[in-house]
Length: 294
Image (cartoon, rainbow, N blue to C red; front, top):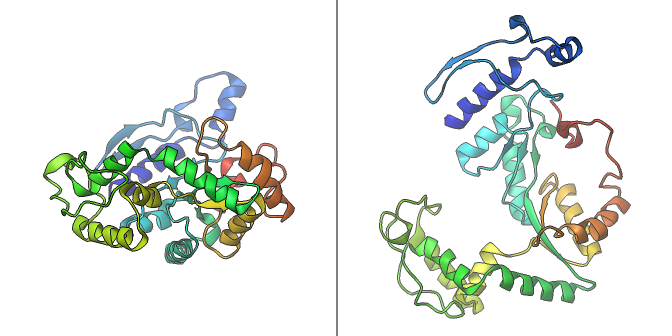
């Protein structure tokens, strides 16, 4: 597996620097002696690497390894190598299922559950009332998914030009074309059976009266947490306390101020519940800040 070999080579390069080599070099002002570095001589199926690491060892030894794959192989790779999983499983029950699956793989590779953190991406919309937040969520989603974006999203599954369809109308009745034909030729297709997915989407759209744009919003622009700051804080806390995640990577919908509302209104609620730090340890590494065990 390419990723496995890549990590093994990277670790060999990181470990090539003796722990005290950088400090000694700064103190003396001299170049490192040859015995302060260990050469890497790797000849594998994917990589041929001979030489020394060009960057000194960091204070935490190795960078924190973050993984984002979700296949069975990806989960095995994460359980053996990753320290953080940037997950798509932000829904509560789905998150619990993913959490149990991945954390359940750790004992077999000799790892503690706290040595791997599952941090899904999460978006948020706040309001002074739940109704206000939901209305804002709808407005933001319509801005995020323009009519052209909705058609383009659908074309990735259908594999054909859908420019003649109304984004505010029903889904196409035609079936998707094969992966080596049409507009998606040469691209990686992430759906094994596009015809079955299209059928399921049409069923959902018909049952709930969803247009093409509504459906795309459902799958591509649905906000994870919507509500008042208190409601959002409670939802986040529930996910962590009931093992649907170890936390979240919060994603704002605007730049550069998209996180301001979250920092100003949600974090104080989390701090009041005692589940979010009020300060950082001076000099702590990222690994220490994340609470990762070795």
